[in-house]
Image (cartoon, rainbow, N blue to C red):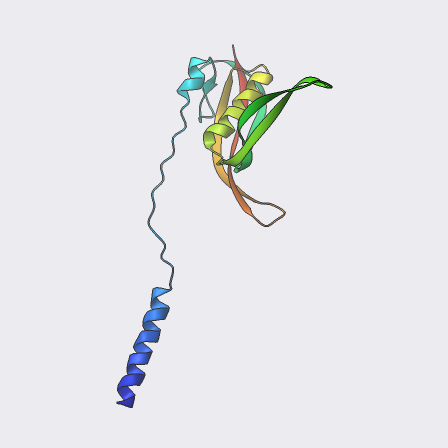
Length: 151
């Protein structure tokens, strides 16, 4: 009888330890960055390092975005006071914003436009991570390419 209790206890302990293991679940992820929006605005984008038209090279562009807290909405409140008059108070609602390749591309294209360009070639989109001072891991995206001016 004692042997049966020991065997039963060992089975229970083995079952408890086996059920505590973490499972790694299968996942799929598909990404798509739409360049057509920029084409409609006159900005040429390609991942190729060669194109079939003449251009002037303006410079290298890189843009990186990381997930984190950001202003997700704003509201204004008008405060009327006899002494100070009318004042507008702005309240910002802060929430988590996940970085995306589109965010990085928007930043890169803004820089291209600022430099007088109308294209970005040899685009590379790279997922990246950063560990901040509090040892938290943040994910993001890095985009690099060459700003050009089509002739």
